[in-house]
Each structure stands twice: as C-alpha cells, then as structure tokens.
Image (cartoon, rainbow, N blue to C red; front, side):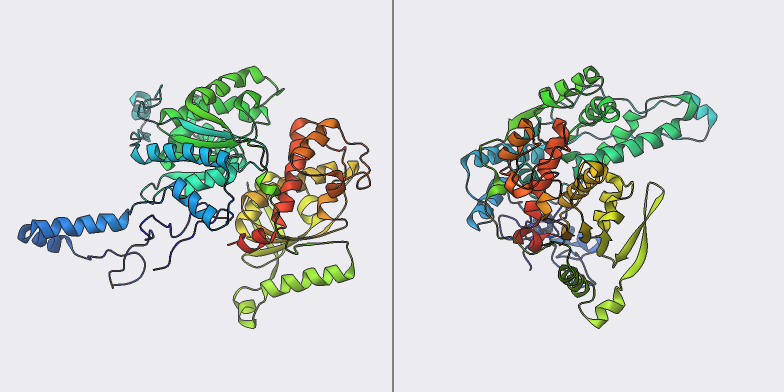
Length: 499
C-alpha cells in the first residue's frame, strides 16, 4: 500500500492518501471486484443479515474492522510537525512548537465537534406557498458546542500558511465538509453567490446574505482562510454579517492574516461600519501572534534555474528549449496532449485566450498576461487550469507602468497560492523589475518601504529601490511579491510545485 505524503508546498488543498499514526493510509482495502475503494468484506445486505443471525460476535468484528479501515486514527498536527522536523523539511523552533500546540488543541476540539444540522431552504412555484410558507429560521447565536476559531497573524515569512495547511491536511477523511481557500478567492465566490441570491429574490426584497451563509455552511463546517485582508468597502460591508451567519450555522474557522484584527481595513472608507466585524473576530477567535523574530523564508535554499535575464537570444532559446521539453517530452505525448494556440478560458462570462498551451502548461508574454485589463479572477482561473506557466519578456517597470506592476503582483500572488511552477525571462533580475532607480542607489525609497524590506530581508542591492508604491497595502504587496519570487525560484519550489 502506498503511503501518502503531506506536501506543504503542493498545489492541492488535500492529500490523496493521508498518512496516519498507525502507518496506514486513507485508502480502503480492495474487495477483489472492480477498481477503486472497496470494502474488505463485500457482503450484500442478505449475507450481512445471515451473519448477524448466525454469529453476532463475528458480525460485530466485521463491522468494527470496516469502520477502522474507513476512518483509521489520523495523524495529529503535533505528530506531523515532528515528522517534518525529523525529516529536515522544517527546522525546530520553540515558538512555532507552541503555536502547533494551539493547533493541536483546536484540532482535537474539531474532531469531537458535532455540527448542528443546517435548515433547508423551502422553495415552491405556488403563489400561495410563497405567500404563506415560512423561510428557514435565521440562527442568532453560535452553537454552544462550537469551538472558538483560530486567527493567526504575522508578517511575511512567519509560517502562517504552513501552519494552516498542517491543520487542514491532518483533518481525518471522515470530515468531508471542509474547505481551504485563499480569502481573495472566497470573497469573489461570496460576491457571485450574493449577486445570484439578489437575482432570485428579485423586487420582493429580502436578505441575500443569510441564504449565502447557509449554503456555504452546508458545504463546509470547517473553513480555512489564507491571507485574510480587507481592502475595499464592498467586502467590508458584507463581512460582518457573512462571518456571523457562518458561525451561527456552526462553522469553525482557521484564519491567517498579516494584520491583527484591530489593524484590518485601517484608514478604509466608512471603517466604522467594519468595527463590528473586528469585534466579532476578537470575541469568537483565539487571536495569536506568530512573530517570533524568525523569517522562515530567509532560511537559505538552493535556487533552481527558473529565471532568465537579460532578454538575449540565448536566454530566449533556453526558455524555448524548456517549454518544448515539458510540452513534448515524447512524440506520443505530443500527440495525446498537443500544444494549441489561443485556447479559450471563460471567467465571469468573458473569454481569455491562452497564446500557447497544453492541458497543464501555458505560455504568455508579459504583455499578454499583464498588459491587458485582467483581474485577480482571471489569474486565479489561469493558475487553476495550468500547473506550470511560462512568462516571457518581463520589462523593468517604472512609474508609467504602475498598472502593469500591480497586475504582475496580483498574478504572482495567484501563482504562489496555487503552488504553480513558473519560468520567467526578464529584462533585469526578476527581483529588480519594480525598481525605478539603479540597484543599490537607495534613492526614492521611503522609510516605511525600507523598514518593510528590512523585515523581509530584502535589500535595495537585491531588489533595487522603488518609489512607485506608496500606501501601506501597496508597499506590503510589493515586498511580499519580492519575497515570494525568491521562494518560487528555489529548488524546493521547482521540485514540489505543480504536482
């Protein structure tokens, strides 16, 4: 039986074969008939009934065995963390061990938690039914048995995503209603659902958020949000009621963020309307600071050759060679999954054309991916469809290309979140593409920018200095993109991403 492997840097939300403390996996033993998961005892109801009547003890033993095979004892976050430290994937860190201890306690509470049933929405085409039927009750408080959620915050490099994935991937397969999602993608989904609910309600009015919260709760009672942040008024206006609705339906959450709840949506428009959401997070979550003074991304890694500069014929030929070797490794593979031009991808009713692609590998020029008015939704769809991306001819960007720089940062965030492998050719070293000064000059860089870069271990000599980004959110996004580009250029990323 093949042992499953926990991949902290894979692009999947869950593992195909989870490993457990007893050394087994979540695969069921084969029955000997057909393929896939089968029971060890492939008996019909009549046979089971016969066994139960003739030998109740044997019947109980059979079902006890089947139950133990279907839901074996899962490995805990603490045990999995110890394995990763022993194997050298992670380094031992006292502060992180304490955080894992909190994850462990929350994990144990979730395993014991029995979520309440979600009331069904009643629909009918009858006018009388619509006039006199009662809507499902809107719950006003969270179930008393629901554990408090976890809100993990800290700067880039404090291990937020790794810890959340450690929790999510050790949840046993018996918990099927679970979801791990980047918060930006979650809000896009929520806005789509709320819009659809408004269309359904029509002119009669009503609350579109309550049914969305109910539907989301039906799909998952364990939610993991990565990169929780609030940057626009549309999100701020619905978040309190959406989060409150989810919790009242019994949903428990793990949230990661770079900010303490008190610092969310700071200086935002109509921030006073968001204060109740902040209080909700502080009262229903255990808020935990991950900053231990250790930046886990600054631990030295051997860089893999995925970035090529400058834009010379030699580097173009090298990029072409890698693309051809991955898309056409054999003549048979080239026939089964050929490279096609202008593959259509549809997002929000719009069609995006992919210049060159197979089913899993795509190639764009910088102008094609960032020179057009594409959004985070488009980039999320691209990274969902393709596990390896080639981006060619990335220029050094100045103030006159700020929109393209913002899109490139959004694109890098989407690639990082989906664990996409990238190959890039650029005019200057990839870390210096946002520089509008000569590398190392130090001119035009604000004190706040310098402070953020120092915290992330990014010197002007490494990434150049840039004055194109001004606000707190912009500066953080710029620095985070640089940090992620460093990580995505490591051999570890190149070998484990896109799987």
